[in-house]
Length: 84
Image (tube, rainbow, N blue to C red; front, side, top):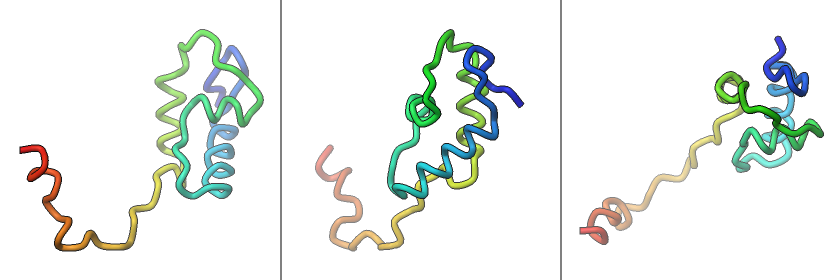
């Protein structure tokens, strides 16, 4: 399915770019701009952004895996103590 009519970006290309970026750096933050750059294209009118972002977020491997290490007990609740 074509997601961006201005540049001809498809949902398949978006998913492939997300997979490629995640494979190259497991901790990278994936944005629409990074996907356009990876595909060698530039966003034009922005009318596709809602569908583009939905496709990007639904791609397998989009989310960064949670850190498997638990937070040490002495650090839990630290933010509320500092802020208040």
